Amino acid sequence: MTLRLYSALGREIRDFRPVTPGRASMYVCGVTPYDVTHLGHAFSYVQFDTLRRYLVYKGFNTRYVQNVTDIDDDMIMVSKRQGGRPIAEIRDENDAIFRADLDRLNVLRPHAYPYATDHIPEIIEATAKLIENGNAYVVGGDVFFEAATFDRYGALNGLSFDALGKLENPESKRAEKKRGHLDFLLWQEVDPGDPSWDSPWGPGRPGWSIECTAMSVKHLGAQIDIHGGGSDLIYPHHENEIAQAECAYGPAPFCGHWLHNGMLQLDSVKMSKSLGNLVLARVLMQTYEPDHLRLYLLNTHLRKDANYHSGDMDALTARYERLKAAANAQAVQPAGAPASPLQRAFEAEMDNDFQAPAALDLLDQAASRVLAGTAPDGEAAALREALATMGFAFAGGRGPATGDLNP
Image (tube, helix red, strand yellow):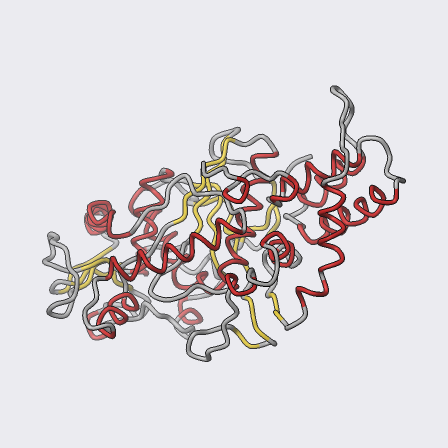
């Protein structure tokens, strides 16, 4: 069976055909560690971790990169609020908590975990290429990408320039300097005392989107197979990434499949620090086993918005205990035995645009048969393998929770 995945670019489900046959490259936008991370972050990274695992299961030599945005307006603001505390200290403190959460959830370590501040030379190089190619311009110490020079700008969102201009745009800065209202900063002057690096355009710091372009190209090359992130990044961040990468480095498309996870809400209200309605993965894991939380997070399709309610975890307790017990039942698959019907059904769901919730339904039904003693030969082994493929530590899924700290 052929894996088929949705891509936001084109808004269609199509066959997964990597740039290099037999290999798969994934870049997933990471966090900005200026404060605590919440259940919505866990939803994103467990989902993409499971997709990564399934690519490996399908035989792809998979390389996974997840960045850290450790210089931006929020990092600077928090540093100032904390009396000038070094940004690196804030980053390291919050990142350590975040990584510990993902380790407990058995999320595989990335092959590369780049910090934006470690890639200033690559960012400057990319910016210089865009100026040289006529896609960017300098005003004082600021460098802007000129959106009108890229005729496919807006394709990811399926919107015209006018429609894009009506959307909320956190990168819409310094309008008085820009040629066009959709132009965005690649490099920016900073206020006195703010972190800065030397550049051909004077001391300053990177814009937001250029960071990911530089890190992606550095660690995966000029074309990648899958780019992941939250649906709130489709505009402007990912739209900008496409424009930057294709104008600076040439090959198109920059990315074969754009995948975006839905937003996680609390009682139908988007979680946000300003509202104070955050649910923290680490708090839930004080009451529930990490695999129980992983089950909850995979019970919603990647692209759908999830809506957390008190009691949702308890509603999954019976299923969790059933899957866990069945995974630990005696499961011997004779060498050379054909694929079981359960394995084929599991693959059919996962190959069909990564239908993890439907796959879990199949596995739950199989678990009931295993525990009742009515499962056909090979089904218990197939069940355990499928659960391991989905990353469950209780089924032997490799990762930090089972002592494997390798990528």
